[in-house]
Amino acid sequence: MGTDPFPQAFRIGAMLVGAALLVGAVMRRALPSVGMLAVRSRFTDMITYGVMGGLIVLLALMVQPQPWLKIPFLEEVLHLTVT
Image (tube, rainbow, N blue to C red; front, top):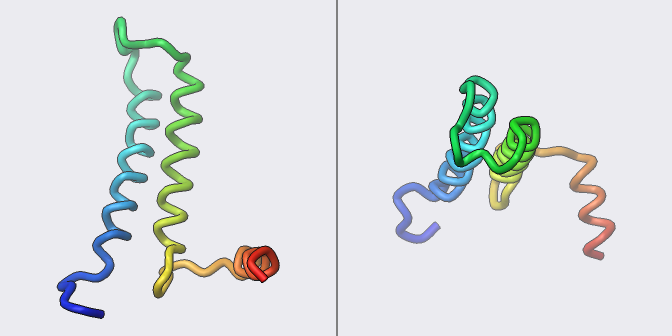
């Protein structure tokens, strides 16, 4: 639509943000220590980064228009809540 040369750029950008969080979770697990910047536990960081990264990637795949991933159960729940 319009003059946008790549209409799915927002989806790719959101997926990159989610992927960066997932990579951060893996790096937090792999690196031995983070020095004086460590305020939370390693487990808390891994769970937080992993869940948030996964959700962002999932939502980027399901965003309208023309979603790349369709989950019928979620479509039915949304239909029931909106109407």
